[in-house]
Length: 81
Length: 370
Image (cartoon, rainbow over all chains, first blue to last red):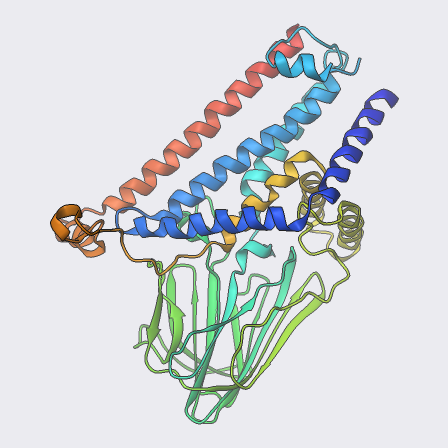
């Protein structure tokens, strides 16, 4: 139990540090590019509902990320005897 | 160990941690997985009254005869929205102030989307002024007071038309009437529709209460783009590069407040806080931008794709995906191909989710028997 908690905290600390180190500008640029791309997808609106497509995409992406987070926990618990 | 695991991600024979869990713990473990994943999926549409930042895209202040609208940016905070107030005074001719909810989720069928899609506008013609608020547990009540002569509200798929309120008295309503002046959003179309000439807004005040904190913006004179900054001490959005510890503190604070302030929403609060912490602490938090990106993205006024170029296509220009032709053709034969495509996309989406879930559960069962 203690070992598991220790691992969890170490991993939290590592990623917290990384999140503090990476400058805002990088992620802001990424966001900007992604938003620009998504916004321009609306030119396809004459042949399909782009909003629906984006919704589906977002649902899938969120699902995958949710599964990833679960798997992250699973990984820690699985490897802590 | 990590390296060996990553190099053999489907090797089920390493580790006995999961196996050592009791039967009840395993059930809780798997149920937790479903709760977490489902919350991730439906996070933005899980409750009718718990709004998050993605559900309020922007507030648009129009003025100057239909000139470019000014946007009050939405507050970058998640929480329970309990009040919206819009106050504006008309200028020499008219003024219009709209709150518009727009995001990519608008076309989600009701069976999936349980939230409220709403929008409201005030319109003060002449020298009127008005105060408009949304009240009621699900914001179905529209209250209007002041001397402004008209307002327009629409909710979900229904256009409410002109509604005249004075205090708590309905002075009259014109359902299905002609569109009033103002700038509003046509549901079902991904563009703004500017109906009529829009006059000058002399002053406007916008206020919303989220988690008991007032966020407001006062606009006086010629509209200019203004950032609405949250006045809460809570970290805003807690993006990837912001302070994670602040986010934890803030989330825990919200959690504690939630216990005392909202017993009925306790479970939702707990899940929200867990979700918030996980999203912002774990590596996955780099992807927390995804929701923001989807919500911020708005339809551009970009034209249809135009193929042209010197020496190309015989120096002709070809308009690709012209918007009206296919729509007209579909309408003339009564075949809404876009709707069919919507159903297809949803079926594919949930098919992918279903298959993925089956795969994961299968993997977990294999874990148990190893």
